[in-house]
Image (cartoon, rainbow, N blue to C red; front, side, top):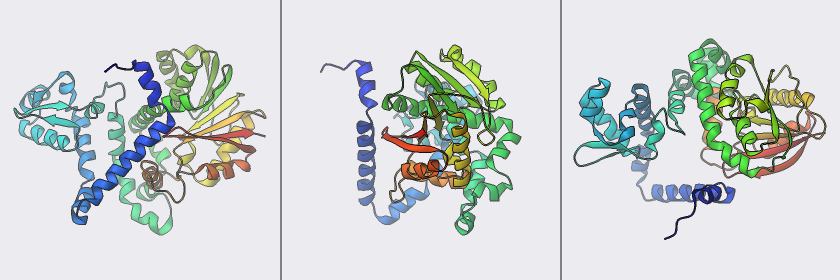
Length: 368
Protein backbone atom coordinates (compact mmCIF):
# COMPACT_ATOMS: atom_id res chain seq x y z
CA UNK A 1 0.00 0.00 0.00
CA UNK A 2 1.31 3.42 -0.96
CA UNK A 3 2.12 5.57 2.07
CA UNK A 4 1.11 9.22 2.22
CA UNK A 5 3.91 11.77 2.60
CA UNK A 6 4.44 12.76 6.28
CA UNK A 7 3.45 16.37 5.57
CA UNK A 8 0.09 15.24 4.17
CA UNK A 9 -0.52 13.03 7.19
CA UNK A 10 0.31 15.87 9.59
CA UNK A 11 -2.03 18.24 7.74
CA UNK A 12 -4.86 15.70 7.88
CA UNK A 13 -4.37 15.26 11.60
CA UNK A 14 -4.79 19.02 12.09
CA UNK A 15 -8.35 18.96 10.75
CA UNK A 16 -10.66 19.93 13.63
CA UNK A 17 -13.35 17.54 12.38
CA UNK A 18 -10.93 14.61 12.44
CA UNK A 19 -9.56 15.49 15.87
CA UNK A 20 -13.09 15.78 17.25
CA UNK A 21 -14.16 12.52 15.58
CA UNK A 22 -11.24 10.67 17.15
CA UNK A 23 -12.09 12.13 20.57
CA UNK A 24 -15.74 11.10 20.29
CA UNK A 25 -14.86 7.60 19.09
CA UNK A 26 -12.42 7.17 21.96
CA UNK A 27 -15.05 8.38 24.46
CA UNK A 28 -17.69 6.06 22.95
CA UNK A 29 -15.36 3.06 23.14
CA UNK A 30 -14.56 3.93 26.75
CA UNK A 31 -18.26 4.09 27.63
CA UNK A 32 -18.90 0.80 25.84
CA UNK A 33 -16.07 -0.89 27.72
CA UNK A 34 -17.36 0.45 31.02
CA UNK A 35 -20.89 -0.78 30.29
CA UNK A 36 -19.57 -4.32 29.91
CA UNK A 37 -18.01 -4.30 33.38
CA UNK A 38 -19.89 -5.09 36.58
CA UNK A 39 -20.38 -1.87 38.58
CA UNK A 40 -18.03 -3.06 41.32
CA UNK A 41 -15.25 -3.79 38.83
CA UNK A 42 -15.66 -0.39 37.20
CA UNK A 43 -15.62 1.25 40.63
CA UNK A 44 -12.36 -0.48 41.54
CA UNK A 45 -10.86 0.69 38.26
CA UNK A 46 -11.85 4.29 38.98
CA UNK A 47 -10.58 4.28 42.55
CA UNK A 48 -7.24 2.99 41.32
CA UNK A 49 -6.73 6.28 39.52
CA UNK A 50 -4.08 7.38 42.00
CA UNK A 51 -1.86 4.48 40.91
CA UNK A 52 -0.89 5.50 37.36
CA UNK A 53 -0.04 9.10 38.19
CA UNK A 54 1.96 8.15 41.27
CA UNK A 55 3.80 5.47 39.29
CA UNK A 56 4.67 8.12 36.74
CA UNK A 57 5.79 10.46 39.53
CA UNK A 58 8.19 7.79 40.81
CA UNK A 59 9.48 7.28 37.28
CA UNK A 60 10.20 10.93 36.49
CA UNK A 61 11.57 11.72 39.95
CA UNK A 62 14.15 8.91 39.67
CA UNK A 63 14.56 9.17 35.86
CA UNK A 64 13.77 5.46 35.91
CA UNK A 65 12.94 5.07 32.22
CA UNK A 66 15.82 7.13 30.81
CA UNK A 67 17.97 3.98 30.27
CA UNK A 68 15.13 2.55 28.14
CA UNK A 69 15.44 5.38 25.60
CA UNK A 70 17.89 3.26 23.57
CA UNK A 71 16.05 -0.06 23.83
CA UNK A 72 14.81 -2.90 26.07
CA UNK A 73 16.54 -3.69 29.37
CA UNK A 74 15.90 -5.83 32.42
CA UNK A 75 15.16 -4.30 35.80
CA UNK A 76 18.56 -5.50 37.01
CA UNK A 77 20.33 -3.62 34.22
CA UNK A 78 18.34 -0.44 34.89
CA UNK A 79 18.91 -0.66 38.64
CA UNK A 80 22.64 -1.15 38.10
CA UNK A 81 22.90 1.98 35.98
CA UNK A 82 20.88 4.15 38.35
CA UNK A 83 21.87 2.71 41.72
CA UNK A 84 18.32 1.56 42.52
CA UNK A 85 16.76 -1.56 44.09
CA UNK A 86 16.33 -4.12 41.28
CA UNK A 87 13.24 -5.95 42.55
CA UNK A 88 11.40 -2.69 43.19
CA UNK A 89 12.37 -1.41 39.73
CA UNK A 90 10.83 -4.55 38.23
CA UNK A 91 7.62 -4.15 40.21
CA UNK A 92 7.20 -0.45 39.36
CA UNK A 93 7.89 -0.95 35.65
CA UNK A 94 5.51 -3.92 35.62
CA UNK A 95 2.86 -1.60 37.07
CA UNK A 96 3.67 0.92 34.36
CA UNK A 97 3.06 -1.82 31.78
CA UNK A 98 -0.47 -2.34 33.13
CA UNK A 99 -1.31 1.18 31.94
CA UNK A 100 0.24 0.79 28.50
CA UNK A 101 3.28 2.95 29.19
CA UNK A 102 5.78 0.08 29.08
CA UNK A 103 6.00 -3.47 27.77
CA UNK A 104 7.32 -6.53 29.58
CA UNK A 105 8.48 -9.49 27.52
CA UNK A 106 8.80 -13.16 28.52
CA UNK A 107 12.51 -12.75 29.23
CA UNK A 108 11.91 -9.99 31.77
CA UNK A 109 13.01 -7.07 29.58
CA UNK A 110 11.13 -3.78 29.64
CA UNK A 111 10.64 -1.34 26.77
CA UNK A 112 8.69 1.90 26.39
CA UNK A 113 5.53 2.33 24.35
CA UNK A 114 5.08 5.47 22.26
CA UNK A 115 3.02 6.94 25.10
CA UNK A 116 5.55 5.89 27.71
CA UNK A 117 8.31 7.68 25.81
CA UNK A 118 6.66 10.98 26.79
CA UNK A 119 8.07 10.33 30.27
CA UNK A 120 11.59 10.87 28.89
CA UNK A 121 12.91 14.30 29.84
CA UNK A 122 14.52 14.90 26.46
CA UNK A 123 11.57 13.73 24.34
CA UNK A 124 10.39 16.33 21.84
CA UNK A 125 6.94 16.33 23.44
CA UNK A 126 7.93 15.35 26.97
CA UNK A 127 5.22 15.28 29.62
CA UNK A 128 7.65 14.71 32.48
CA UNK A 129 7.16 18.28 33.69
CA UNK A 130 3.39 17.82 33.64
CA UNK A 131 3.69 14.76 35.88
CA UNK A 132 5.97 16.60 38.30
CA UNK A 133 3.46 19.44 38.46
CA UNK A 134 0.34 17.26 38.78
CA UNK A 135 1.87 15.30 41.65
CA UNK A 136 3.53 18.22 43.41
CA UNK A 137 2.57 18.87 47.04
CA UNK A 138 0.83 22.12 46.13
CA UNK A 139 -1.48 20.38 43.64
CA UNK A 140 -2.20 17.39 45.86
CA UNK A 141 -2.93 19.69 48.79
CA UNK A 142 -5.47 21.64 46.74
CA UNK A 143 -7.29 18.49 45.62
CA UNK A 144 -7.36 17.15 49.18
CA UNK A 145 -9.38 20.17 50.35
CA UNK A 146 -11.98 19.94 47.57
CA UNK A 147 -14.74 18.87 50.03
CA UNK A 148 -14.47 22.31 51.63
CA UNK A 149 -15.10 23.98 48.26
CA UNK A 150 -18.41 22.13 48.05
CA UNK A 151 -19.51 24.07 51.13
CA UNK A 152 -18.29 27.55 50.24
CA UNK A 153 -17.38 27.52 46.54
CA UNK A 154 -13.96 28.97 47.33
CA UNK A 155 -10.65 27.77 45.82
CA UNK A 156 -9.44 24.65 47.62
CA UNK A 157 -5.78 25.64 47.32
CA UNK A 158 -6.39 28.92 49.14
CA UNK A 159 -8.09 27.08 52.01
CA UNK A 160 -5.28 24.52 52.17
CA UNK A 161 -2.37 26.96 52.20
CA UNK A 162 -3.73 30.33 53.29
CA UNK A 163 -2.39 31.88 50.09
CA UNK A 164 -3.15 31.91 46.36
CA UNK A 165 -1.32 29.63 43.98
CA UNK A 166 0.33 32.68 42.38
CA UNK A 167 1.67 33.91 45.71
CA UNK A 168 2.88 30.40 46.48
CA UNK A 169 4.72 30.11 43.15
CA UNK A 170 6.33 33.53 43.63
CA UNK A 171 7.69 32.32 46.98
CA UNK A 172 8.97 29.02 45.53
CA UNK A 173 11.05 29.76 42.39
CA UNK A 174 11.79 26.09 41.65
CA UNK A 175 8.09 25.24 41.59
CA UNK A 176 7.39 28.38 39.54
CA UNK A 177 9.97 27.31 36.96
CA UNK A 178 8.49 23.82 36.80
CA UNK A 179 4.98 25.23 36.40
CA UNK A 180 6.10 27.52 33.56
CA UNK A 181 7.90 24.65 31.82
CA UNK A 182 4.77 22.51 32.06
CA UNK A 183 2.62 25.25 30.55
CA UNK A 184 5.08 25.50 27.65
CA UNK A 185 4.82 21.76 27.03
CA UNK A 186 1.03 21.94 26.93
CA UNK A 187 1.08 25.00 24.67
CA UNK A 188 3.34 23.26 22.17
CA UNK A 189 0.88 20.36 22.05
CA UNK A 190 -2.05 22.66 21.22
CA UNK A 191 -0.25 25.22 19.04
CA UNK A 192 -0.36 23.30 15.70
CA UNK A 193 -4.15 22.97 15.92
CA UNK A 194 -4.62 26.63 16.86
CA UNK A 195 -2.26 27.90 14.15
CA UNK A 196 -3.92 25.74 11.49
CA UNK A 197 -7.48 26.69 12.44
CA UNK A 198 -7.35 30.50 12.48
CA UNK A 199 -6.99 32.84 9.46
CA UNK A 200 -3.98 34.77 10.72
CA UNK A 201 -3.06 37.96 8.83
CA UNK A 202 -0.04 37.75 6.58
CA UNK A 203 1.37 41.02 7.91
CA UNK A 204 0.96 43.15 11.01
CA UNK A 205 1.52 42.55 14.72
CA UNK A 206 0.37 39.82 17.10
CA UNK A 207 0.60 40.51 20.83
CA UNK A 208 0.65 37.59 23.29
CA UNK A 209 -0.59 38.84 26.68
CA UNK A 210 0.66 36.82 29.64
CA UNK A 211 2.53 34.68 27.14
CA UNK A 212 5.45 33.57 29.32
CA UNK A 213 8.51 33.03 27.15
CA UNK A 214 6.41 33.26 23.99
CA UNK A 215 5.77 29.62 23.08
CA UNK A 216 2.37 30.31 21.45
CA UNK A 217 3.53 33.52 19.82
CA UNK A 218 6.58 31.81 18.34
CA UNK A 219 4.47 29.19 16.57
CA UNK A 220 2.22 31.86 15.05
CA UNK A 221 5.23 33.83 13.80
CA UNK A 222 6.85 30.71 12.35
CA UNK A 223 3.70 30.13 10.31
CA UNK A 224 3.55 33.77 9.10
CA UNK A 225 7.09 35.00 8.27
CA UNK A 226 5.98 38.61 7.68
CA UNK A 227 4.25 39.04 11.04
CA UNK A 228 5.94 40.76 13.97
CA UNK A 229 5.18 40.02 17.59
CA UNK A 230 4.90 41.65 21.01
CA UNK A 231 5.28 39.56 24.14
CA UNK A 232 3.72 40.98 27.31
CA UNK A 233 4.40 39.53 30.74
CA UNK A 234 6.11 40.30 34.01
CA UNK A 235 9.87 40.58 34.35
CA UNK A 236 10.39 37.00 35.58
CA UNK A 237 8.93 35.16 32.57
CA UNK A 238 10.39 37.68 30.12
CA UNK A 239 13.91 36.98 31.42
CA UNK A 240 13.93 33.64 29.64
CA UNK A 241 12.08 34.76 26.53
CA UNK A 242 15.07 35.84 24.46
CA UNK A 243 16.77 32.47 24.58
CA UNK A 244 13.53 30.60 23.87
CA UNK A 245 12.48 32.82 20.96
CA UNK A 246 15.98 32.55 19.50
CA UNK A 247 15.70 28.74 19.63
CA UNK A 248 12.52 29.03 17.52
CA UNK A 249 14.14 31.46 15.08
CA UNK A 250 11.84 34.43 15.74
CA UNK A 251 13.67 36.54 18.35
CA UNK A 252 14.41 39.37 15.90
CA UNK A 253 10.68 39.79 15.18
CA UNK A 254 9.51 40.04 18.81
CA UNK A 255 9.46 43.02 21.16
CA UNK A 256 9.23 42.20 24.87
CA UNK A 257 7.05 44.53 26.96
CA UNK A 258 6.83 44.32 30.72
CA UNK A 259 3.23 44.60 31.85
CA UNK A 260 0.56 43.43 34.24
CA UNK A 261 -2.75 41.73 33.47
CA UNK A 262 -4.56 43.97 35.93
CA UNK A 263 -2.54 47.19 36.04
CA UNK A 264 -1.93 47.59 32.33
CA UNK A 265 0.62 47.57 29.52
CA UNK A 266 1.35 49.51 26.36
CA UNK A 267 1.37 47.52 23.11
CA UNK A 268 -0.56 48.30 19.94
CA UNK A 269 -1.30 45.27 17.75
CA UNK A 270 -3.70 43.86 15.18
CA UNK A 271 -4.31 40.61 17.05
CA UNK A 272 -4.03 39.93 20.80
CA UNK A 273 -3.80 36.48 22.38
CA UNK A 274 -4.95 35.31 25.80
CA UNK A 275 -4.09 31.62 26.00
CA UNK A 276 -5.14 29.77 29.14
CA UNK A 277 -5.22 33.03 31.08
CA UNK A 278 -8.86 33.72 31.85
CA UNK A 279 -9.60 30.24 33.19
CA UNK A 280 -7.33 31.05 36.16
CA UNK A 281 -9.55 33.89 37.42
CA UNK A 282 -13.09 34.60 38.61
CA UNK A 283 -15.55 36.66 36.57
CA UNK A 284 -14.65 40.03 38.11
CA UNK A 285 -10.94 39.42 37.60
CA UNK A 286 -11.54 38.29 34.01
CA UNK A 287 -13.50 41.44 33.31
CA UNK A 288 -10.58 43.53 34.59
CA UNK A 289 -8.10 41.60 32.42
CA UNK A 290 -10.30 42.18 29.38
CA UNK A 291 -10.49 45.92 30.19
CA UNK A 292 -6.69 45.98 30.47
CA UNK A 293 -6.33 44.48 27.01
CA UNK A 294 -8.97 46.82 25.57
CA UNK A 295 -7.12 49.85 26.97
CA UNK A 296 -4.06 48.81 24.94
CA UNK A 297 -5.89 47.71 21.79
CA UNK A 298 -6.86 50.04 18.95
CA UNK A 299 -10.44 49.91 17.69
CA UNK A 300 -10.94 47.02 15.30
CA UNK A 301 -8.17 44.92 16.80
CA UNK A 302 -9.05 41.29 17.49
CA UNK A 303 -8.57 39.49 20.77
CA UNK A 304 -8.39 35.70 20.60
CA UNK A 305 -9.29 33.83 23.78
CA UNK A 306 -7.65 30.41 23.44
CA UNK A 307 -9.11 27.91 25.91
CA UNK A 308 -10.95 24.62 26.24
CA UNK A 309 -14.62 25.54 26.00
CA UNK A 310 -17.00 24.11 28.58
CA UNK A 311 -20.70 24.12 27.78
CA UNK A 312 -22.73 24.12 31.04
CA UNK A 313 -24.61 20.88 30.37
CA UNK A 314 -21.93 18.84 28.59
CA UNK A 315 -19.54 16.47 30.38
CA UNK A 316 -16.35 16.03 28.36
CA UNK A 317 -12.76 15.04 28.95
CA UNK A 318 -10.47 16.88 29.44
CA UNK A 319 -12.31 20.17 29.83
CA UNK A 320 -14.74 19.12 32.59
CA UNK A 321 -11.85 17.75 34.65
CA UNK A 322 -9.78 20.86 33.96
CA UNK A 323 -12.69 22.89 35.31
CA UNK A 324 -12.44 21.04 38.63
CA UNK A 325 -8.66 21.52 38.52
CA UNK A 326 -9.29 25.26 38.34
CA UNK A 327 -11.53 24.98 41.40
CA UNK A 328 -8.91 23.00 43.28
CA UNK A 329 -5.99 25.26 42.36
CA UNK A 330 -7.11 28.73 41.28
CA UNK A 331 -10.03 31.14 41.51
CA UNK A 332 -11.14 30.35 37.98
CA UNK A 333 -13.17 27.96 35.84
CA UNK A 334 -13.56 26.75 32.25
CA UNK A 335 -16.20 28.73 30.36
CA UNK A 336 -18.31 28.57 27.22
CA UNK A 337 -17.94 30.94 24.27
CA UNK A 338 -21.19 32.65 25.33
CA UNK A 339 -19.81 33.24 28.83
CA UNK A 340 -16.64 34.79 27.40
CA UNK A 341 -18.72 37.03 25.13
CA UNK A 342 -20.80 38.21 28.11
CA UNK A 343 -17.66 39.06 30.10
CA UNK A 344 -16.15 40.88 27.13
CA UNK A 345 -19.23 42.98 26.35
CA UNK A 346 -18.68 45.15 29.40
CA UNK A 347 -15.01 45.57 28.55
CA UNK A 348 -15.45 47.10 25.11
CA UNK A 349 -15.39 44.02 22.88
CA UNK A 350 -17.99 42.69 20.44
CA UNK A 351 -18.26 38.95 19.74
CA UNK A 352 -16.65 37.60 16.57
CA UNK A 353 -16.08 34.08 15.30
CA UNK A 354 -15.93 30.97 17.46
CA UNK A 355 -13.69 28.27 16.02
CA UNK A 356 -13.48 24.70 17.26
CA UNK A 357 -9.97 23.37 16.63
CA UNK A 358 -10.98 19.91 17.75
CA UNK A 359 -9.25 20.54 21.06
CA UNK A 360 -8.95 24.21 21.99
CA UNK A 361 -11.61 26.76 21.21
CA UNK A 362 -10.77 30.10 19.59
CA UNK A 363 -13.15 32.83 20.77
CA UNK A 364 -12.66 35.96 18.69
CA UNK A 365 -13.55 39.31 20.24
CA UNK A 366 -13.37 42.63 18.35
CA UNK A 367 -12.41 45.92 20.04
CA UNK A 368 -15.19 48.48 19.51
